[in-house]
Image (cartoon, rainbow, N blue to C red; front, side, top):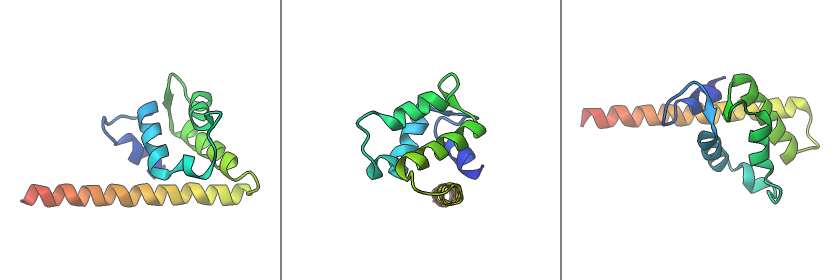
Length: 108
């Protein structure tokens, strides 16, 4: 849930994840570095899981499961769930660093 809300806070802030935020997340998390994307699997996953080109929380979890299955088809559901937790942790740390930097610049 934290990962979803962290991505929603990216500019422009919103309550859902659009295709631009999804593309940025894919680049930052390097979803494409671990797999060939010759059939545009990452983009097609967004199309399959989005509603009106937006992801809500349920669809966000669903698309992450889909990406984990594509990258590591041999892994169990427990390992994939752990991967989602790692993503949440990474995004929360990134968000905390950004908030810290904003506070530092305000004091200057």
